[in-house]
Amino acid sequence: MLDAIVNSINAAIGFVNAVLWSEWQVLIYLLIIAGVWFTFRLGALQLRQFGHMFSLMRGSGKADSSGISSFQALCTSLSARVGTGNLAGVAMAISLGGAGAVFWMWVIAILGMATGFAESLLAQVYKVRDQHKEFRGGPAYYIQQGLGSRWLALLFAVCLFLGYGLFFSAMQANTITDALNYAYDIPTKYSGLAITLLAGVIVIGGLRAIARFAEIVVPFMGIVYVLTTLIITALNIHLVPDMLSDIITSAFGLQEAGAGALGAAIKNGIQRGLYSNEAGSGSAPHAAASASPHPNHPAVQGYVQMLGVFFDTIILCTCTAIVILLAGGASSGEMEGIRLTQAAMTTHMGVYGGHFVSIAITLFAFTSVVANYAYAESNLRIFKCDNTAGRSAYTVAYLGMVLWGSSASLAAVWAAADAALGMMTVVNVTALILLTPTIVAVSKDYFAKTDAGEDVSFKLGDCKIQGKPEKDIWVGKP
Image (tube, rainbow, N blue to C red; front, side, top):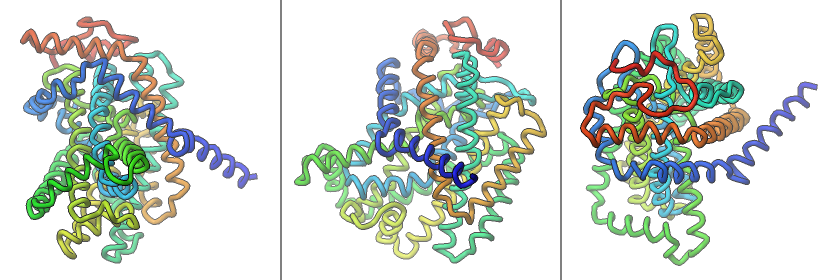
């Protein structure tokens, strides 16, 4: 009887993944449509106001008693975004789609920036206060308050708990312990215990502790990775023109391989770009909702979180691509994933290249483990478990999954996590489309105030909002 139930569950998960990810690839089309839709409805703001996005970072370090700073929210979302996809995912795209996949990864990142802006703006509009009077929010909140759909909000929250709260944390822990075991022969049970204890020390301090951790670690690992790539590029500067030419010609099928290579480049570039930047999945809005933006307007955090998509894909994924392509990786068809990245780094840095990649994977994956906790914890209020007992129960379950995942065989868990993420994305993008009038109205309010040189602080009544946001959030300046 039990075997029959398990087989039925596995069959259902397999069907969902086939529809969303592999055979029908519904999610790829859905996210492309969302990116194009919001690029159009928002007047291509990711291009038109590209510089403004960076200018807002000047005040991003400010916070108050109700929320973390915009910069901390950005780093928290990057903690989850920046992971093995930036190292292994890019390598997979290049090995399967050639150098041209990099170009299409850029295209989907630019479109995804508009989607990231939209979902983070909504997270701010419909955020709430928890029992500690701190901001919380995310798709479940703007679905419930903006669309008035409790069941759809619960569906999203359940998928998030399973995906980010439990499954993804176990898998990231598994990635770390496997990398350390492969590189340094460290037994997985010991490294797994260390990861669990360290994660517990950080997450027990709540969102603010996680944000402080992200604020330190994410910029450090990002800067080191970018500087390493710049050094490699400088040492191989004579190869850069050919590399750029290869990316462009491969992207448009102008090489001998023709249409087959063009299709592979487009498919793999778009797919890996979507997986990496997470725009539209509904994960980053949880970090966005927790911030107290300065100036105090929902659109400000939209711009800041849009920068996260840019940094994740345009910057970090491009760094990995450069390292691989300058090492001749596009022709290494027999290598895939992290091995291709390791081989490329070894080509450039000798034996230290392998150590660099192992350390990078460990840091990238561990920050994801910690950020995943914050995302799921933000939804406790949806289940009316925003209390000491509810938070303690979730923390125990989360740490248990991290410890278990560090040494388990996770094939079935991967499949379940993919299904949960896919369902999250479908629900979130549907909500985004339905809430487009609010997204456009709040954006236009910000555009009008900045163009007029006015105080941009937002309050309810400045423009028409769908549903019923909490009244005590947007009542003027914080």
